[in-house]
Length: 113
Image (cartoon, one colour):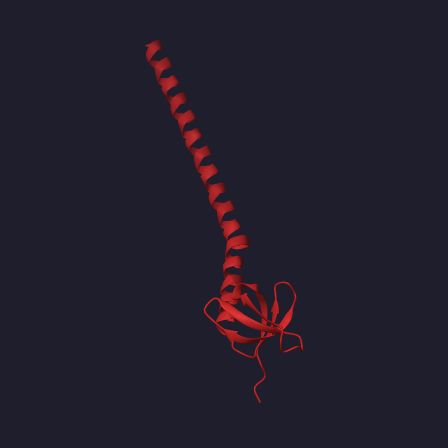
């Protein structure tokens, strides 16, 4: 009779240890989900939002717009192709440089009169 009680107690101890390990895995999974969600809302989402803003700005760019390059140069757009633009820098009309659209940091629309 004592043998039955000992095996029953050992079985219940094993069951509680297994339940505790399952709870630890669930807690770990919960922390991974929380940290992943925080990273999404603090890093990935704002970056995607900024990229959409830049793409919209470059799509609306037209000839005559004043721009600032990522290097800090100010110029005026004189021609646009699919991936490149030709920019005129300074008051010298002979200083025209082709550059990628991705090198443009800011666009100021031309004032139409």
